[in-house]
Image 1 (cartoon, helix red, strand yellow):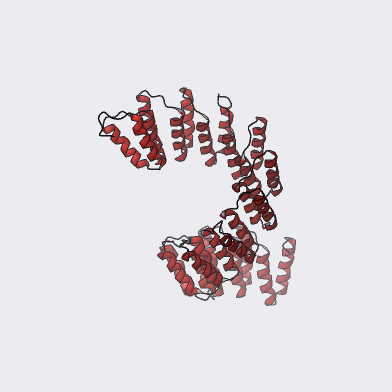
Image 2 (cartoon, one colour):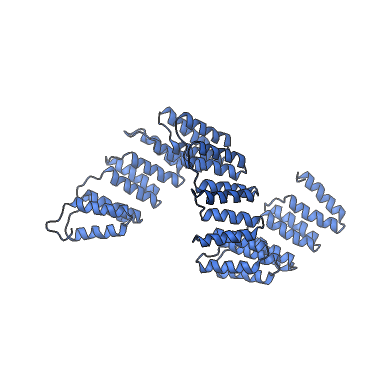
Length: 498
């Protein structure tokens, strides 16, 4: 087409460029646009708008505005689609203030924006946590010829619910009804999520009834939100009632529904029931288990010390050409480590490395814990040193595991050295770390140091729990320091910890 004489009309080139953009071939579209101009073919508003879209998707917002300036210079009047593309580009680049200023400039110059333009701007604000600014913009729209629609309200309601501002979301929902803007399944799904996050399950279930009254059918996403929340709270019976309601409503269960139920069973230690759900997926054949399904089961089996079954599932994944993720490996590594199968742990770490799955802090913590608990203290210290060389930043769990291992391995001074290092570096230690150190001191009869550390933890704003007192009291009774033990026991009662 570029070599034809005369050149075909510009809209033919626009069709090709538009097709390339739909296939996400943005650099190719930009390259061909340049060839158009090189051949002396004058671009029209459509081809220039396509170019703006390409630059926006690639994050080159300055180039987008250069093209916009060219549009104005050539005397074209950009339409709402072009302007919306620029607004979306600014939002995608996180330049929300510029997007708002650009909106104001456009209005001042008499350019016309549409529902999509405002919906895009509100969406950008809400996704960046600027929900209040989104509400303010919604109010400003009402003063213009454009009326707010369900998409705009849905975007803000979703943002409010994700920020746990459910009461505000409900007020906005009521405002929609007053203004006779009909809510849809997206509105209800967002509210469902909000109620579930706040553990307001009665209100969430009531929403399902409200949807029926309004002749709005809940979709799989709506139901999955409720099932997931109930399972996370251990309310498996209630979750199964919701699933039965899904089946009754002819909503087909998807892999997320099955995974959620399996995860719920594992959380309440009913791994056999989770296994039944997993097997039923494979037998029914309608929904195939995915990597996450296997990961849930492997993790659940490992926590119940059913390691061989977990390994069989892991091998089954590999037979089916499923690539285990870091979480899958970490679950199995932790299970093997807790079962004392150190050789298998190292084989799995090597396999992770060979498959290009880099070990993360959770992997190292599991390895460290396994080595410490199985008496490989020198190897644990070497591994800890290796973390720094591999730029893996130890966290509070890493240090606590190491301190615990050193204390139990008879290296109290080294444990104290690590503990002091944490305090000097200003780490905010939790009660678990203090308890581990106090336990180490008590085991060798250093009660005064243990009591001093208990006082120090309170000075640092870490409140001792029942376990803190129980560690010291038990050790004191064992050493016949009954008076000190009874004094601490009275203090424990006074604090309401007994």
